[in-house]
Image 1 (cartoon, rainbow, N blue to C red):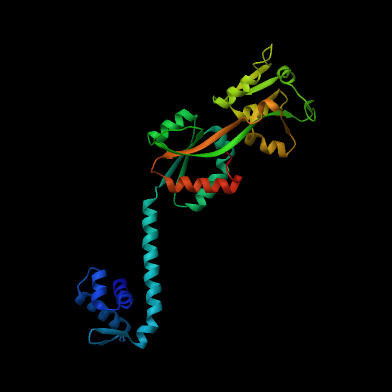
Image 2 (image 1 turned 45 degrees about the vertical axis):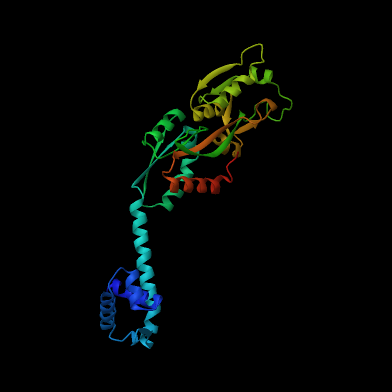
Length: 296
């Protein structure tokens, strides 16, 4: 059965005449008439009564109409679906900082894969400056970076991860009130450095001390810093996401004090203006579902 014949049948009914249907379909009136006649031969029935310039559905025509409409709608939906698939890339390249790669992407990617099963995902980890340049140069489609602004980029504040002091099980700071910077500065400290302004604020907390803080180990990897704390090599300031599971398991304990309140790592989602907005919005929606409303 020819879908064009079904289309002509539905359009004649919708517009009330062969002439108007032919105008909408960009066909001549004889061509529309020929399509209806072909459909009638296929169905072995008469679909219209023609009285002068007026056309009326026959009883058989009324019976066939809902099926014709459903066939045409199904065909049109299929065309739209195929066009959408053709418009989607084969691969989506996502850049991310180490913390996002370690603690967020394992939850985000399966949901993106479920939503876009035909797309392959390529993840690249790096520092913010490099990731921004990769987006600007179209080497990466979308990226998670520290808070940045750029006139060529669409940017949305994605998450704020509080930086807190974490100690191991049995540490004397647990349950202790009125801790001072001096108390913390005397402890064996493991410093996780990620090069952001937020970490500079942590350093400045100790500027008032007469003696330098007792920093015994420095690392640029939050997982390394966390594992060293678990091994009781010292205590460390860590992003909350990196320590969330260990806090649940009562292996690490956050210690709060006024001087570091409000210090957090801000993560933004970026892409080039006018590009990849479908995936950009999808990732934001997924993240809101996983972690609630993004902070800030």
